[in-house]
Length: 167
Image 1 (cartoon, helix red, strand yellow):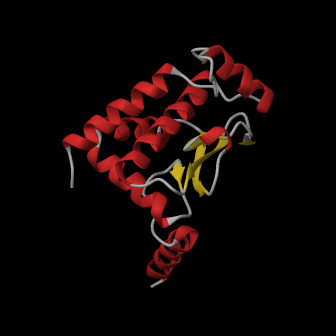
Image 2 (cartoon, rainbow, N blue to C red):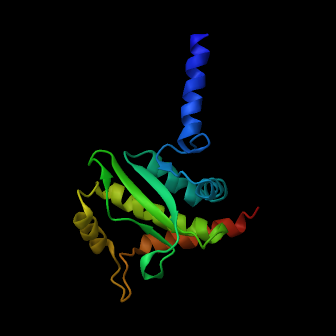
Image 3 (cartoon, rainbow, N blue to C red):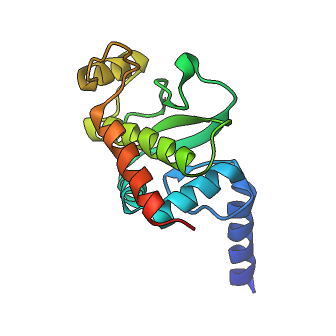
């Protein structure tokens, strides 16, 4: 009986965290709409699945949330403010609320690629170190927003896979 009670409490805690059981260990959201994007991207795009699985295999946690507006007319952003510790960084990704569907999944993939760039480089200690890291990765375009060619390529690849695997 005690074993059933403990299992019930554990399940309740998972449900209480964000309204449903966690699907991914290190990529999380408290918003149902974001969890739907994550689930659809994971199910329909091998590249998106690779991004999430790679992040899930590394120390660190990524919280994805929606926001009404981002600076510089962006649709998504990896915030340069880190939480957690150098051993287990906590990163935040924001997705603009006015986007949806496959385009939103592509933007989310783009930002998850940036998360991987940070995790692969070793967690920067602070915002300045994060800016330095992306400054070194940036392709130095005139409208630079700390952008990388890999993130742009991931967006395109994921959108192609989503178009090929429509629901």
